[in-house]
Length: 307
Image (cartoon, rainbow, N blue to C red; front, side):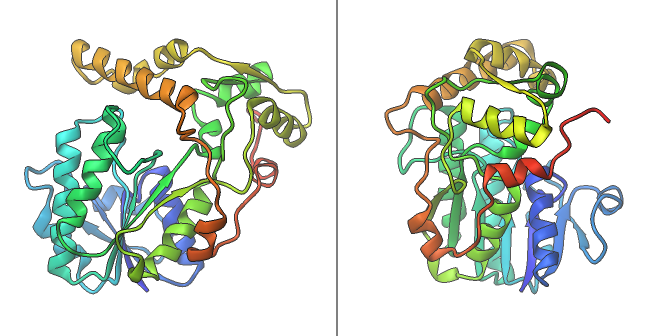
């Protein structure tokens, strides 16, 4: 296939670019600054300009970028740390651009768990409305809603404690079960969806091949790192405080609101009767056949040191 990938300079989009190239697809990406982005992308990627910051979300430029592409993989900035109205407008513009270009299917990555109704959590509900905005274009939309990424453990809110303190510290209750998924597997699932436009309208909750509690994750990290790593259940309040740098560009009142919302949705993740972090992948893999990566295999390929 020939693919257009949005968000290719982010972690999730970059994993999709790499997976698409490995599978032999032609890859085009739409970015704000093609010159700057090209330096960080693999060889063979075609780069087009489309500025997310423009009032119309660069709809005309995005339609030009999508010309000749069979599928569009849509990744967007976080709905926890960005203006929801702008993101919904961006999704609507994406759908219209895909329709103009004759794209066969849009694969939408929500980047967080989804339910089939508004839940009253801003980050969740923005993604819900983004899906509706994409679907308004009448281009088939397949939605993938991943749970927690294994790759999060390589980020600033988790990695330093793992390597410096031997502590897997995360805002998960000890009894919380999580179907951790790696970004490479999400990429494979999105490419599988891109080849199946007949699945338009479907929403797939996606996770990994096993469901683990914090102590089980710590044990797997210990084996991979070759040294003991313990699990520490971090309070949601402490987690949100650690995420304060993510909202530092916002005015203080808006930053406070975003962190309050982050705390609300994390309490739902931990305590919700819907168990938003657990997924049975058996029915998903029947329609999107890929091989999933166990946590131990993923962890064994990471560097758990500062060296």
